[in-house]
Image (cartoon, rainbow, N blue to C red; front, top):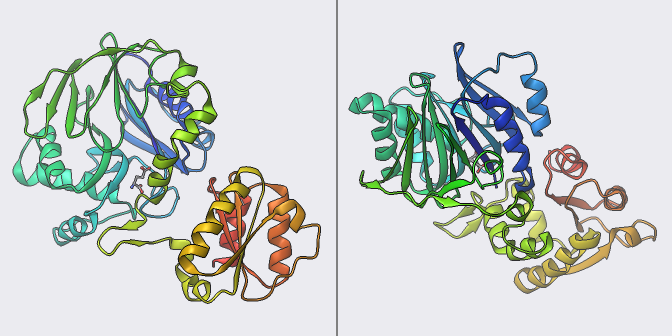
Length: 394
Ligand code: GLU
């Protein structure tokens, strides 16, 4: 799940956005970026890696701005790198967008835009959306707000978006469908975020934007509309919860929250990897290995702790669906005995951090015995992931 933080008001936007992005780090991400609008124009800074990597990138820059948008990306379309990170400019540089979700019909819209002379710098579905909005605005000679509304009518997929406009230094436009977006309402200032945690330090008054609603903040005024262009009276709620309680999502314990979040986590994980037309799941890293995997004699899962439990679940599912023999081993046991591993075996190494020492050692051992290794982990850039890409999935 990516994170969105945006601000317009009288405070310095950059530190507020960076702090907010850090609050959303728990959601997981692979890159981070901000767009700031000041006397120097609309500037985008983005970086693969952690929010601190973005902070390093920002050092020494003129960050003074009262309006900005920020994002932590969880890649669905295009690998995690600096170019694919958000925000994305529109072609004429007037707009920049941050987006959480997927635009399912981005490929056909991209083709239409290419036919009209648009070039794309990134592989993302998001860059298609911002250019589509720009294209509509140019061809219809409409306001940006109207262009967003018309564009969203054509979009299939899920989105929470915030758009900043170089020509309107006191305006942000946001919309959502399927992905969360909260608006914080302060004194002459507005905040946008994926959840309330980046906001409540500044204001307790929030609006939970509904699906298919557009919020426009312009010159200190907030208007909420539906996609039919009808104005909606937004329901401003007072958040009574403290930061820690919000982070726990109303549950007593983080573990309980995580347990209840599992269906959503699985859906998020498959987002952009599920081809609904022919009900296929596409995992880019496995593409070159599918034949080999289908012919595997045996799959050995190595992991520790919770990852090991995940392996036990995988064992049931793989054996049931693929009829391939699956063994699940504690990495710490596996590495210290002399396990039978043959060429043709697949070893799936699971590690949430990607840095679990026993699991890394088990990978080395299995590799030395000629197995093909698949790494499953939560952290892009971790050792398991790098190992996986560098040595096994060229
Ligand atoms: N689909 C977009 C991308 O791949 C947004 C992903 C996200 O929600 O972070 O850039």
